[in-house]
Length: 269
Image (cartoon, rainbow, N blue to C red; front, top):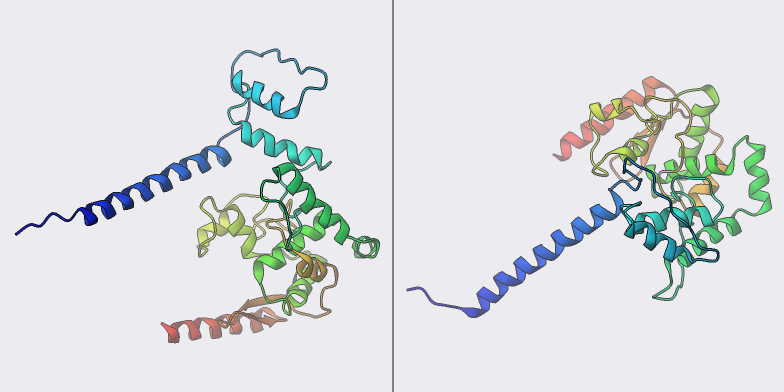
């Protein structure tokens, strides 16, 4: 006999409501960050900015006139320019550490705090070291982000840095998996062979040297590792299945390490 239970009906609608909210937030997120932000009309439009007009007012009027399709994206892009950076992204320039900030701090203030912390970290001795080893700060941040993408083990960072410095020195491609992960449209996942064929300047399997810019915000340890690599002869490394890596000086040694890893993986399965 069927019994009507209002509690179960309520729980059912609660699940539907949660799912609906999730879909709504997903749509909002997509519209904010994955829609173009350029003027697409066929005819030009005259737009006058008043002397002393606030940036928020300019952004709002641009959106109202249909000149920009996304006011939030436009605001984010202009945060970058107010920091004096000629970049397409703040990736790598927001220093990763713990901060204490007010709950309702404006986004401009927070980005300024993060970028200021990076500048304070790069003291004169680190700037001098950067020039000494023939890099720019942007290149060091880029290399540090790859190192961070490879490992969370701080003890391994200088070793991996040594590998990449060795490869750069002899003109060998970095072949860094994290740079491929960075360009995947749906985010990080297990890489496939076809992923290595993606035509992108961030594909370090396809193009030599460093990619155009950082792929994450690396933090102090990875930056220091990029600046002070371990003096080693390694050119290869592979996961050891225990959270770390095994390093090799020759391709023969590396291939053996790869076979060992695959055998351990098969035994676990």
